[in-house]
Image (tube, rainbow, N blue to C red; front, side, top):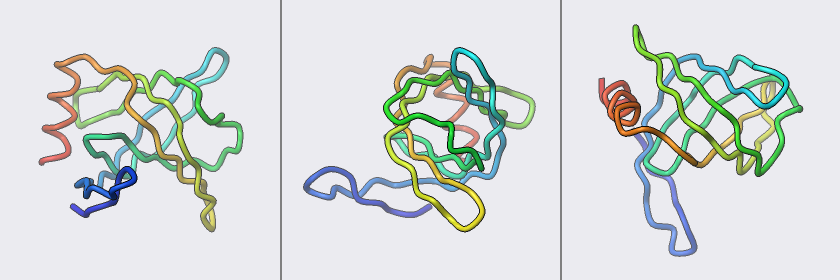
Amino acid sequence: MYDDGFGQDQEPIQSFRLNTCGTISDDFKTRVVRITDVSRVGIGFEIDDFAIKMNEVYETTIFCDDESVRLQLIVRYAHIMEKTIRYGCDIHRIAKNDLNKLYYDAAV
């Protein structure tokens, strides 16, 4: 767990580190990503692909043990790292039961 600033007032937001796999899909292609962290604001993932578009909505599946969580993400920023690109996303839409699964997986 770590804190990160959010908004102009830099209100602290707690983030939880994850190391799980998932997929993001646009209209034409599905890509495998590594989910790195989750907070109440959004999700971070890493991939070695520059084809991810900013401010686009992606259908996402996160694999949590024997469950899968489906949600929609809007990609907001990218950070080029040494071997991969880290993307930060806002959660656009998620069902209540999927949100509960995601909370449980982040807490355990």
